[in-house]
Length: 384
Image (cartoon, rainbow, N blue to C red; front, side):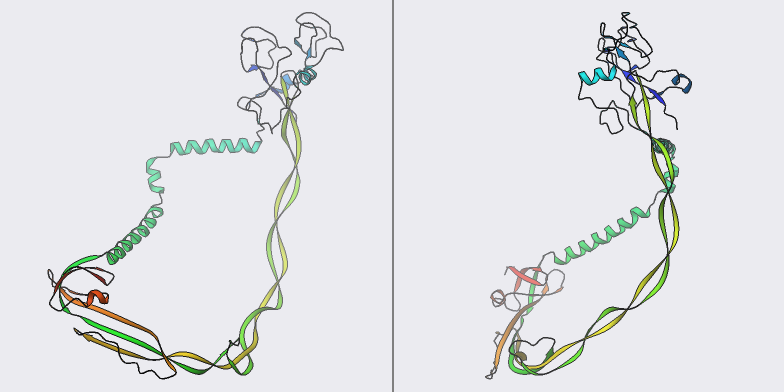
């Protein structure tokens, strides 16, 4: 892979003309020559490769600077083409002058962040660029009919149906929990009260741990659970894909400023790879479930346990709690009470049933007309 020459650019400081071709030693606009302040650069948007035949005739050494008129001369010239002064050992070349006047200048490379610098474009990048352009043209020429035919309607309908189902469910739930107001005539006022009673008993139980205050009866080893353990190994094969070096290739890794208006490619080598398949043998473990036995405790313990309930109920009567008649080893664990209103809606004749707190329920009577707001079966009297 030969190193190609690329023609660079330079800017005229006198008339501010930009992007003057590197082969021109004088500004095409004002005629001024290149001098000590001239800097050569590349532009990624415009590359001018020099043909091989012409490149072979170009001197690849940097220009030298005349100490008298400060103009840049080709390395081929032994006298200054502008003032006629002979070339001498004290004449600096382009790079020596650049280093002296601008020690912070950075060399051109494909890592440069300068917007005017030349960025490396590998063959693969050119291919991608070409493919992207072709793809863009295809998209532009894609007809509306073809787009309609290829459109994936299921991608819209499926989410739409799911959304509709969720919306309907939400509306149904909202209607269910939405408070509703009725005007009704009370038909009956049923009520119920319940008392749960516990008894302190001695019971026998078993567990993997002995509870506090338990009296141990005996222990024994029992099956607790199973754990997977390796029983044996089986030899198996599988196809695996691997990568190996297949050779090397040359590529353009950067560009050297020649200091004469031209740049030369920097050619580097990098390995190339190939993928191949290979049958691999390996050992795979086969597991079995191994039973685990642990100590189980059998014991007796004293506990409060549910024994019985005392329930009272009625309709249109004064509520009361039933008699518990507790024994010495009994206690009340909990009690509950429920007060319902059953009535008929005045407009549609619909039967309505809802619960009320005792304070409101106790003020009502059968035959009474009331306005009520009901939410999830719980009522609230608005007016009597």
